[in-house]
Figure 1: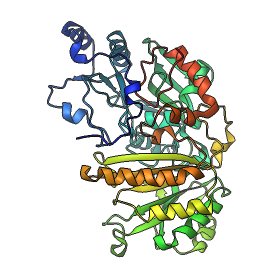
Figure 2: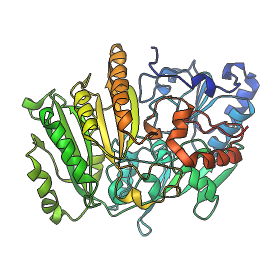
Figure 3: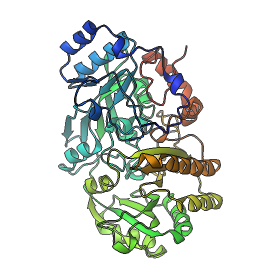
Figure 4: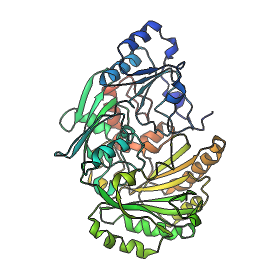
Length: 480
């Protein structure tokens, strides 16, 4: 299975590295003897399944997969990779679009067994281990009537989404996921275990809030939670013929809407099955997925101008438990599809941009392919541009264009559509991109994602990981 990725910095990312197969067997056995989790070798029966990640377009063969049971296993794995000059990839939920949670020949440090969660209802916080998905978090916090701002697919890993920033259903109300992060526990490149927060290792805490996995293995996250249980949310869909008008309405409404109102715009193909009505099956449409976090008795009043704009062809918006909204699209996007991403930040949506959106949105190449505009006006704008590594506090949307299909035979079709769509819209963007929605697009693209925060990130990278052990990511290179 060949990958369709750009690969523009794949060769640059490969430091002088050895294969696990080249290491003396006694060293491998010594590593295994003190390891409490599960070590999976290429010859093991479970290897083929263990090396699969969410994006089936990725085909990499690690030399060894270390499923860590605890922090001690993480420390041992980091030391083993460093001491033996192995390429090291960190896997949390396995949702990395370009497959940076896997590597060829080296060691994959897999956190998926580390799923501990402790909710403190009095402090309205949760300590979450690095192998958790957002479904795990929602399950634990909902029992207390609490929630953490996260993404829009609950199978996504906590670690990857958080470290890149965290766009999701509640961003306008409670900020990005990193804006609700209180502390992290990290295993550094030299094997030390440290905590980073506003009180200790402040530079590291600044860097992990948007800087990705460049600085170490985050073994746990401490999140501020919010009293969110039932929200007023769900999708509204309109015919593609109305897309330009819907996008104009959405553009003008969402930027100044009350911060309790969240809603992301999408082009989509209606899945041919329940709960969608049969007459809409397989139709290309546009939609907005809403999430209102205010008082439910005020929801009808808040949504009156939205429904007044133009009756949607489908209106599934109503009271819904937050975990149900968060997991609503999981069945449509299971593990094992082919994915190709392109992304940009957006400040304004001009008439020219709307025309290009409608052109390419009308040409969705497969049922799963889509385009989303995630709003980050509201609460994310209350945080300073340089207060975290996340740079685009002045944007109003994160745009992602995704070609998706189950059939590898359609890879060229979904990839070329996503690239063409992205190239048409890029002139109307703010530049840069959300690092969680980038492919392997080159070092200049990484720098553009961080703008004037990049220099400080390099300094912190050089302090904590001078030899770039953690380079399987949207890499911030240390100074020579």
